[in-house]
View (tube, one colour):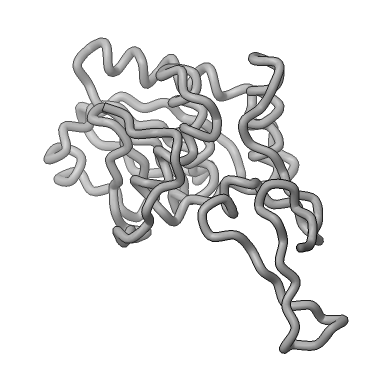
Length: 205
């Protein structure tokens, strides 16, 4: 059962070395957390390897999908969205479970996991982000990946549920700020002064 639509409570700690359950058939992790005993214990039968690291470890009895992407602002990650979603869906139909992982389980794996939920589960981009961050609070897709996810949702639905706030040096997805708001120190006004930014429109208040 998916609990979506609201910002999550991020009180549960998550480690770089955790394999985190997003759904009963879908997990997200960093490469360092992958141990054969852990995978078997969790019943994981399929892996999406998004590390782009040569000669990564492979375990017997596990089906792999290799997605060679760097955590870079110049990477086209969109072309992998459907293939990863199909791989995860196929594993589920066979009664299997999939873990999507990259080097740290923060950006690349998060992006692919979010979009798998959008494509396979029919969630909005916002709902999918909240679902994944609830399972693994350390996720943070890079800005280029966010732009591509937003563009994908906009193209498919004619609108997007996540917006980039532009009232700051680097645009920030509004899902990062919806729960807690944002304030930043102003160099011009001195360290004791703060600029508060509206989480909905990115404007100073």
